[in-house]
Length: 274
Image (cartoon, rainbow, N blue to C red; front, side, top):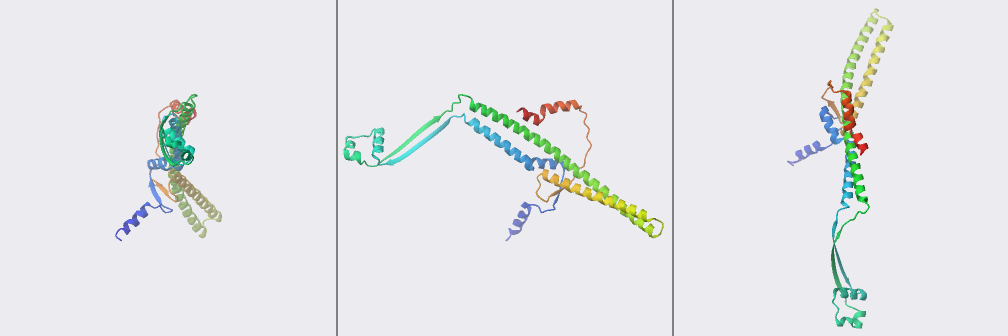
């Protein structure tokens, strides 16, 4: 009974989070989490691992194999008994008796053999298959690197998209509050006879337009948060409060240097060459 609260607390901690849970998340944490938990990237890594295993299996076809065979047999078949005694060199003059030849006693035979199997690849088929598999494995590895880079870009875009969308929602909420205040003031002036009905309709239309903008931007926040949650491999219903903001960056490296670097180091090009 004393362990019951501890067991319940442990079960609650290890269970999936309920729907609607929000967690703080930095950009670096989002990138690290996506690199380890994104389902598409994990599937690609598993395929690369399977390709490496196939390559290892092909290379092992050239290795010599040492084996041991053991054969145990007991029989009273006349031909088999004759053959066993003949092979063992155990014939006696009594064994040539007609009655014993026709109906011999059962004999037991235990044989063992040790063998060494050395494959000979006369036409280089195994070597060619091994080289092809190695090239395919290298291409798979480069595809994984490319997928990691693309995922990093997507996570950064989704993360900053959430940040900017929330800022837009905050600004639009202020605009909606101002529009509602202006509409109330205009209606009060219309009630006092110092404003026209057209003024009331104009500010009401503006307020409704701001509310429509707010609804659209709120939907954009939900879409961006759902995309971010999918990219980082979060459980269903979990959303994140982004703690980082967009930071300006400067790059003094010329464009030609970036082009040269992409041609020499882009994983997609390396995979295609493989």
